Image (cartoon, rainbow, N blue to C red; front, side):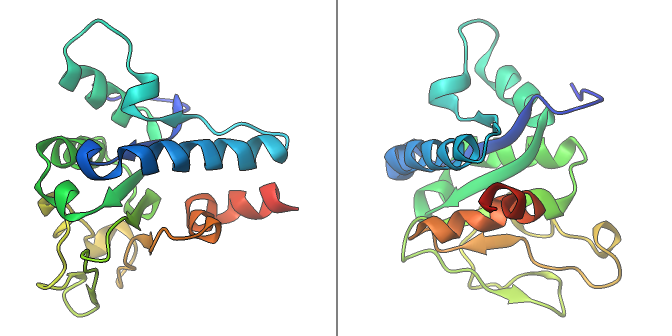
Length: 172
């Protein structure tokens, strides 16, 4: 179910609860605090704070993803193996979102991210969720595809890529 018009959510946070639940909550609070200090609001979707009782869980997630402007994936070996993280990435991509609005945040030193400019894809050694492989066709970003925004997630500055141009406005 794809919704036209302005997104309901500025960003959707996808993560494995077993490895990054507390970190996801911390990231959400940090993003919202930065926005509040700048006199604006960032609407973050995170399952533990945004899901209401009602329809089937996968339907509610798919709907929220279709209505999210950005997807933030907290990467870890557990996220790579998570059926829910896979579903969230696939649903977001199926809603025809631009790959430039995908942001990856490493949550584990065991997460390997490498980009092959010739293949315009993650390297074979990268341990990313399967739906991220082949997700960046040249047609989405011109003849040369840029890798998604990613960070090691260890400091507040790692949140800057999530805001790109918006961040500059928030930090003034």
